[in-house]
Length: 304
Image 1 (tube, rainbow, N blue to C red):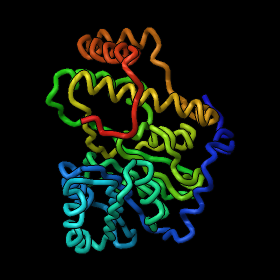
Image 2 (image 1 turned 180 degrees about the horizontal axis):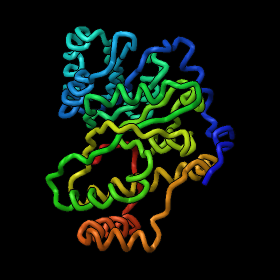
Image 3 (image 1 turned 45 degrees about the vertical axis):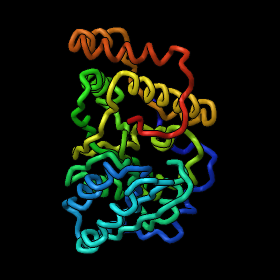
């Protein structure tokens, strides 16, 4: 168990996040949505955001879509939601960047955003109507805080992916922690802990580890997050995830003091195996394949 002093230790040296808040509007929530060739996903994602409930006029909202090096209709689809956003009184900004890269998109979104609360959202995530309001309420505090919702793995066409997802969702880190896969949010005091996102593989892990387990808040509202389809893609994404964690351990070792993961242990692994033998077999096969010398992980990609 970590003590609360971990929150006060110097963490990643990436500048001061306070630079992003010189023009922050305290009551405003900014949703930063990087998108790289997301024409298939951006419409449903924005529809769900703009159908959010429980957010009154006293809490202005803005969506910053950051299209990075898109070669499809992502930009035009996103801009097509301007009338819907305006009707709700929300600000919608669509940045069309020539340069690719998710980290570049996140930093551009941070620079454009006005809100003191920041929600970082993947374009293939579908939020439930209550999620934004619950995140905003959870982060409305003076101390640093990080929050995410209850992840639901979206239905998959692949039996292998369905089996993997069933088991993965029950691993203690996923079932009991606040992993923030696909969506995480921070308040101004939390975002001040780091400056620009560094050029790393795992931005969500980097952000989560800026906070102690006690500073991470799980809200009840769910969101749907899709898992990749098929064994080879699961291996590719898992390899990239492992490489991302290893990179953080190498470059920012102090952050690992905030991990707080509960170990599965032999007895926990046995319980998982007995409760779902097929899911456990698929999960173990992916983990084994990741360790084979099939090359390293590249840059950011959805893996579809």
